Length: 416
Figure (tube, helix red, strand yellow):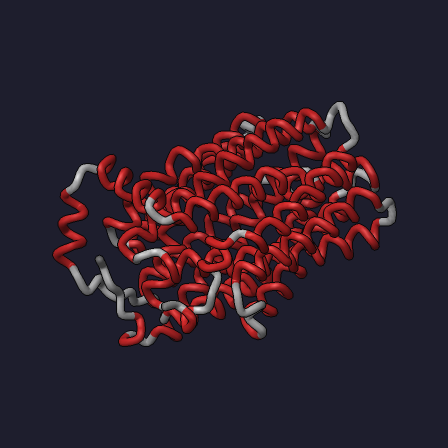
């Protein structure tokens, strides 16, 4: 087993620079993400087209994530993040130049979405695996909460900026900004973040010598042999599927119920980000319930109530308030869920386990949107969000009763 010793490093300095770099990168990525989805929403008004672009954002991650997880366990995680960020920046720059030269087409934006998804599929396992490498285990929940808060604050202004830029400038302006922020994030990570080497370097070299498919198989066997991981991934798969309408079709819901204007889309994104920031701050200070699994279940129930709310209300200020609470519940469910994995999974398997989580999200979300997106062109989107939201609440109640998940959520000082 590979053991990391973050306590001997200046871990607070490291994690501060690391989170700052990720926040810088997120600003550009969020601008482009909002810009592309809103551009498609406003230009087409089609649930089917939103489905196509959502699949382009999610599905490539499913195919690359298994390899990203293996690479995160075999190679330098810091370097993997830099390479992935650089790849995304180069592709985005090419697309921006293409639009600047007058070659504008939805198909080009589709290619951009696919390339960005591939890069993120490599980044996500590496990032989630690197954090426990540089942070003491007892500090993980607090740092994950701080990370959620920083990321959410970084995103607070991006919906407004995206709306302003799309109203005043062509979409390639946002693409160029993303290239600039990605470059800044790479420089911060490259020169300011110091990552400790594995204590067992010989074991790391032995892992590199194994065939990649064998390494991937070992990761799947690790999950198979830990019952709480199997239960955890099944629950998260159901959650992601049911969350698809509320997570991805709310811009379409807003345009249909309140009007097709950028400022309306901006307000709900800011509301959600503000809620995420508040939820992350809550987790970094209070820490949630003593048992992390109970925190996840309670958050699911709260999210369910708010999802029903946005499906029922026709008053935009009330809709916005519900979105704030949905953001809070998203942070208070995701933070303890990630912390459970980081604390319970052996470091040598962390990348592969996180990659499975990435695969679940990147496959199940497109499956959900592939079903609910076209359905939203035939059935009331409000009804879809109400029904799926209520089922998230049922899932939250189940979590409270599952013994394996409750055991996995126990505090570290209670482990026998």
